[in-house]
Every structure is written in structure tokens, then in C-alpha cells.
Length: 114
Image (cartoon, rainbow, N blue to C red; front, side):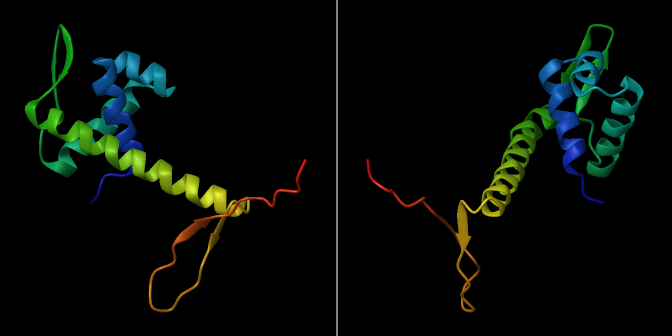
């Protein structure tokens, strides 16, 4: 199985907050649900991402390596959604070329002058 974007968002929130409680509040979900999703993510990746103790939650060495990668995936997903939204509003046009993948181009409204 591959982690989904929601699990990556949860991971980033816990990493940034260093607390399951604060991350759950920020995400507006229960702490139990957040903990279950992080545990599932750790099982999928077959690594421990966080050290948990009485003082709080901190990233493991692997978690620290994974954090910028997770952020990059989330940033790219947000960019992709923005491109689609802009195309739907008519701000981008997609040229159809059978020899290459479609590439968005920016469309500017015509200037009507002063």
C-alpha cells in the first residue's frame, strides 16, 4: 500500500506540533484517529517515524528524512490542484498535441485600453 495525502498531512502536522494532541486539534480530528493513521503509515513504511515519551513526540532520524519529502509531495499535490482549478476558470489553456503530453499555457485577458 502507498500512503495517501491525508496520512502525509497528518504526519507533517504531528512533526510540526511535536504533539499528537496539538496536531489533532489543528487538524480538527480526534487524537485517537490521528494516532491510528500515524501507526498505519509507520506500518506501511515499515519504519518508526516518531519517538514518543512522557516529554512529548519527536521525529526519529528516518522521520526527519521523511519530513521534507512529505512536504514536497503535499506542495506538488497542491500545485496540481491549483493548475486544474485555474484551467477550469479559463485561466489556463491546454494545447492538444498527439506527440507530446499536454502542457498548460497561461491565458491573459485581452487589454481593452484606458
